[in-house]
Length: 73
Image (cartoon, rainbow, N blue to C red):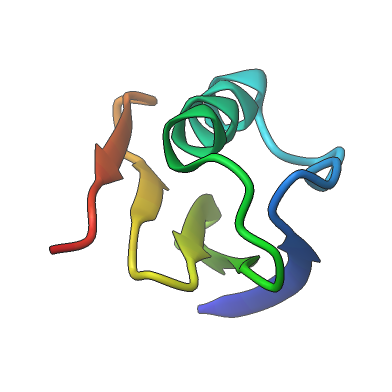
């Protein structure tokens, strides 16, 4: 696993993320609305991005390139 970066909900995601992941982030942010103080954490696993929101919502890219969103319970 390789550490990436953190950024606040509503801020521009890192430029190195694939557009499909950026779209998923935008969709999650539209669902949750304004969340002051909430942040995203980007890590890299086997060269693919894993993006996790403070509430546990996780966005992953599979081996096939498909993006999945796992909502927090």
